[in-house]
Image (cartoon, rainbow, N blue to C red; front, side):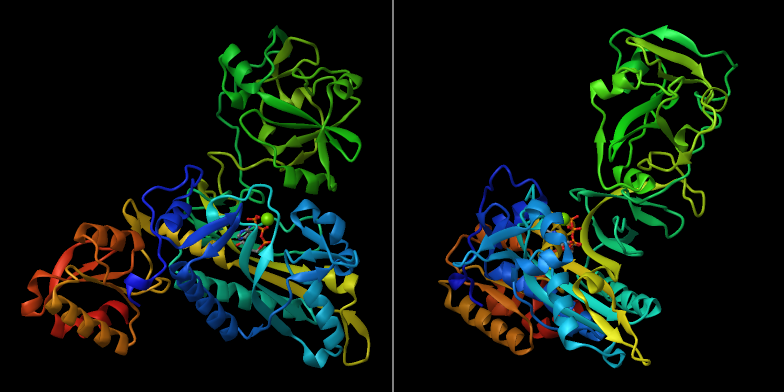
Length: 567
Ligand code: ATP
Ligand code: MG
């Protein structure tokens, strides 16, 4: 391809709201343009990279035995009503009506459509198992579309669905997809981790998320540097020991009231009393489907709402109002577990063993000091309802856990029979007995992968494409396009390389060399070849974008050199 004719509008400056490096670079390098919030066009170079990712996804899905198909984006509302998700999915589902007032949704995911299809087409165990996939555009009216392709409202997803007759069959289908994902993300050049994730309230047992490591990632990963343990913060567990900390082991005194006027937050309290937040027990007053509960957690830690909902077996949790707290005999800002007998107490394991703690006194402007959890709070139910905090150790090997940020690029999920039951996808076994199919679903954010790749492979000058994803492998620059000899040699090189199967973008623009070099760094193809001063000696200049150093090469050595770089 000749760059002269390429639609590649590069930019010097990008809008200030483009926060993520990948978003800025994709705009600057002319890979994408925004049409509306979270909705993008792919320009030629962006599309090429996206297609390379799709090819890798297809090859690995096919290799894993999945079959490609394509489903519609427009879904009749009845399907989503039948699964119960028309109401549950909420405002993220884009809804519309046809000319007759019939309701539709733009597909946010395809469990309903695929399950209905399979229900109509497969009736016997003889046709199972089967795994189907598609690469298709999804629509989600995200609350906060941002970071360019990382969180779009229209985006490209690979979604796959497996149908099995047994849970062991599902295990095998799941493992095949898991392995395929490892291959896909490795081939895309991503640094990633598969982490245990929360499977939500309904059905599903196992679920893993594939996280591309990047600071811009919206997920927090908790992982053990010594063993294989890695989990999403929403699911992760760790071990806390309070032994030997400032909040334990001190001489025992009885709980004593202390005047703390207007001091209601953990931060204020620790400053006021000059103690560590670890020495305070936070009492959080919540309402779990109507019933009040006080959750006790160490002052430096945060409640994990997903775990809390699971422990309490509820779908919704709200905070108690000031009036509701008063009705329990306490007061907002000064709640504490001592003497609060009318309400259910739930203790996070982080407060276990504290014997010199500070808690609210259930009285305006007072706290209690010297509280010994075991002595003063009686029998408590201990549960894990916290986000793992700094310094916790691994449940498997005891080493200290570490934290990282990640972009969720893929998700594998054992669904079980949730959709096959609600939508009636059953099969008959050898004895003619009808059973619901056991399903798994497997997603990859194909367009998000593109952004994640750039997020991990860039520097201040531009993108540094991994070979497998680069829109073009080679960027051929002619310094003086008016110089006939340079153009002739460039043409020769272009023909040689393209005939040998390499993808080459030839910068034949009438631009200053500086502009061309800057653009080449910004576009970031793996190898830059420059035809310039030494044309008469058939010597060109090479620069590998990742390494950066410039060296000379005789044109006669070019093919061998490319082979060593790319094959
Ligand atoms: P997230 O927590 O990021 O919203 P999700 O749990 O909603 O993701 P899934 O429903 O599991 O995502 O979708 C499968 C895959 O699709 C995700 O792993 C992710 O890579 C991708 N994806 C989800 N939402 C978006 C989006 N708004 N833009 C781009 N890719 C997305
Ligand atoms: Mg989402």
